[in-house]
Image (cartoon, rainbow, N blue to C red):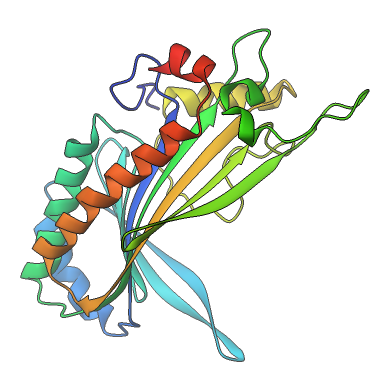
Length: 260
């Protein structure tokens, strides 16, 4: 199990990163998987087969998923009939992550999927593990802390908003403290990757019934075009800047002083 921190900050809170393409249903994906697997095998030699339940109309159906994992289980590519994604619990810096995503996009281009891309997504999950004597709310900008009536103490607080940028939407959710027992945001589907040090620390606090928090920054961009690797990589570079700008705006001076 890895215990490395993510990012170049002095004490990075980053726990998990996902880049995802939502595609128009691609029911012949199974026929393309062997070629994709061959092209990505050097970086992702381990394969896990899974299923996802798709609610499409009145009758749910189980669609196949293929999870291609790195040897150290720090990165994983998920291929499905409705999405393609790169997951990471190891993140040196944005250029490293986007470089890995570029290799996945190039493999998809070479495999000639011809998939229609509905939208692109880039999501960062940061965990708040407070120092002794501090609360999770101390790490958020004052406007995200909510209220605290006299004599009461919060057992769970969630704040959410969406910011419209030119061509992109950034959804920000902050929980400080997170609802009791909740490590990652609700409905977040993580791959079975090795956990970074901040996630292990957060789990330890949860077991001790101490509070943690999280900041979930999710950038979405409508594409509505047939897959083009170069064009998509350019879009992700811009999306990364927007997620970073939004995340930093959510932090208090205490968080910046302790983490950056």
